Amino acid sequence: MRILARRLALGFAFVASIFAQDSKPVLLSRTGGNAWSNAAELQAAAKSGNPKACAQLGEALLRGDADFPQDVPRALTLLEQAARAGQPSAAFRLGMLLEHGDSVSQDQTRALAYFRAAAAGGTPEAFRNLGVAYSTGRGVPRDYAEGLGWLILAKQHGTAGTTEDELRAHVRSLRHPEWIAAGEKRAPELERELAQGSVVKFLPPPAPLVYVSPTSANQSMTPAVEKLVPPPLAKPEGKPLEKIALEPAASPTLPQPSMPALPPISGLADGPLPESPIKLVLPTGRALTWPGVTALQTAADRGHPDALAALGQIYLNGQQVSVDVSHAVAILERGAEADSADAAALLAELYTKGLQTARDDAKAFAFTLQAARGGVRTAIYNLGALYANGTGTKADYTEALAWLIVAQHFDLDSGQTTRIRDYLAKSDAKQIPLAERRAADRVKAIEAARAALPGL
Image 1: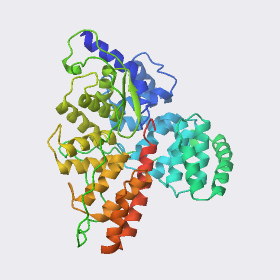
Image 2: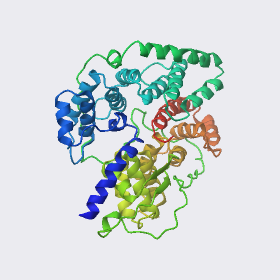
Image 3: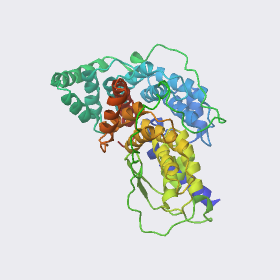
Image 4: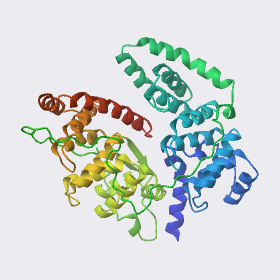
């Protein structure tokens, strides 16, 4: 019992900080702390219509835990009630759900209305999300000046990150300095517009938020091959290209601390738990830190994507736990199912190399595709190589060129793009502009995915 009590105490102390890194921020960290001493008081306050309590209880029911078993329909009702009562954190949460199609049907345009309402209430991340949306054309026509205006306000409101600087650099590369001037002029105008309204004023018209259940458990966790893309074209006639080598290890790692290996958390005897900080770098390039194994395990048990990827990685590397590949794979598959590009990248590496697991080209391709879409740079390049080599999928030089162009955009190229382009120029030149259009669309989608990652 002592070990269970210690784990729970550490887990609850850590949950606010770990969820603050989530792409779907937890409302408890935005309400000035919990004003209720227990679950019963929180439920009573929500029943009386307290907006802050409705927001907190809605979040708790959305995620589900020991005190509040998951009840998504009721959670959506409470969050909408809180937002309509002027609670900006609830408006922001609903915007995130609609933007990603999480528990509700995806509606990026409606999501922006909730983000604007949250911005009127002072939620910093809402300014950033609006800036990214306008900059990438997500839910609205692309408008770099409008996007820059929102990102300037995001920085002024304390949002960390370099998104504003990156957009300025991109606009300069397009040779349109007037867009930067327009964005700088637009920022104070937006601030004044928000000051003249309120959270409620900017909310979209009321409409039912219908719960959409997640993919049924009997479906495969293996990511689906990309949709809405024409079937792979036949390999061009003529002498095929030489095989393209894959990029090495998908995930950089920090030096491991000098300490003896410890058994997995499930095998620890009752007594003091090791709580040395865990530092690692995920395949997306983010350096993250957890207070210790218990805190990381607690977050993973709650389904946190980054925690699942990190926990799987430490079981692969033997960092503060004994190496347990089968356990790592099970954890990483949960992470991939939770849409973690980092977990998918680690699985792709395992199935590609076939050193710690049986080699499986089909699984390697599927997980590489998921990781590439989520912004893992090496996965983007490797996906181009897999298409070119016909490994785990049908050889398709058009798709190969498209993904290698995307890899170039993210500064990862070894000259293979030119080889594929030259080959298509001689065999089927009309495929080159098709590949370029696909690449441009994917760059936009991947930049948006990376912009949503905490810690980048």
